Image (cartoon, rainbow, N blue to C red):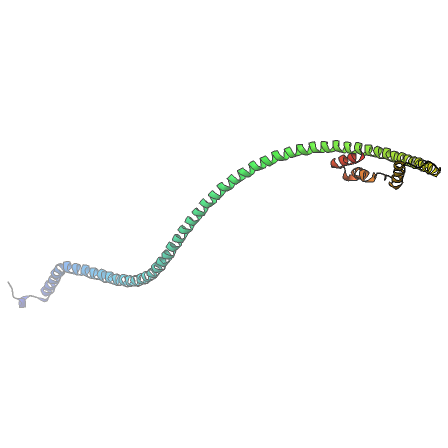
Length: 254
């Protein structure tokens, strides 16, 4: 083999080209691998950047979550307080419902009592209605009786007036008879005095005693009929509701 000094420049050029080609062929997989590695490094860098952004976003989300958790804790505290208040209100409502139930039971008992009392009142009302009907019948019979009594009173008043007229006529007759009796007594007294004046004929003591008694005896007074007629007149004028007055009046007349 010829030494390197014997090679010409053309051969050196060809050798260098050949070496370069061989080196390129040998380095191509490495270059491909390096390009792939660069691409992977770029991708990893981009992923790292994206991951850092995601981490920063995650930090922001964590901060917001912490804030939300604090707010949620406060809300839970308020909710617990509201729950306690609601529990107390529920307890109060339960007691109120119990009281309302007791009141309803008492109201039901009162309503039952009212129904019983209404039933008794209805029975009393029926009894009162029956009594009122009986009273109405009694009133109707009483009105009929009063009409009859009024007719009787009118008849009695007419009879009393006739009796009064008869009594007045009889009283006038009695006055006439009393006048005649007085005249007869005067005549008897004049005869007695004439007999006493005759001499020799003494008067008997019994006859003189009777004459003196007749002179001293008062004349009988007239019977007062006005007291017996006044009840009859009052009955005719408006006091004829009671028949007892007429009984007394008729008793006075008879």
